Image 1 (cartoon, helix red, strand yellow):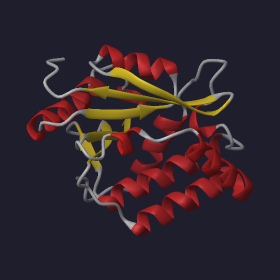
Image 2: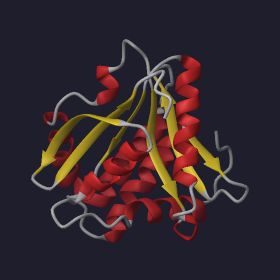
Image 3: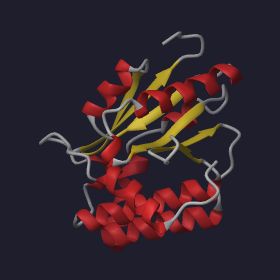
Image 4: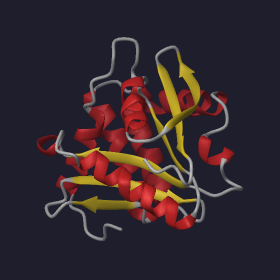
Length: 199
């Protein structure tokens, strides 16, 4: 868990995560955000949820990367959810936030609900600061999630919002479980790595 995190670090995480270059046909979860700043506000709200819920962990001697990770037993913070909802509204406006919520729930059952009874370790967010990307931090973080899942004898799950991201997760040992459609240009790729898979 990350106990101390500065506003600058929250900003760096949000920029690294929200500046991802999607393929022409995809817009990720930000399809209703009005600008780059809107995407950053959305992600900052989520980072605050991760911090306040105790999900956020930093990796590297200089906090080069961050991951929000939780298990089926992890709780979440009410004040964290309020911060996330504020981030969504700030990024999308009230009408956009309402539409996003409706689209999200219409898209079908999220993977964490499907695996709720069997248990799971879930990667909720993974971000590498821009200056450290391409240096193996994603692989290290995913490996630590697999290690925790193996220790608990449960699957490791992740949802991502771009086919190119899903392809990276496949390369690291995940399999595609389902695709949920939020809009014509926004999808959630739900992925699982089963317990006992040696990837």
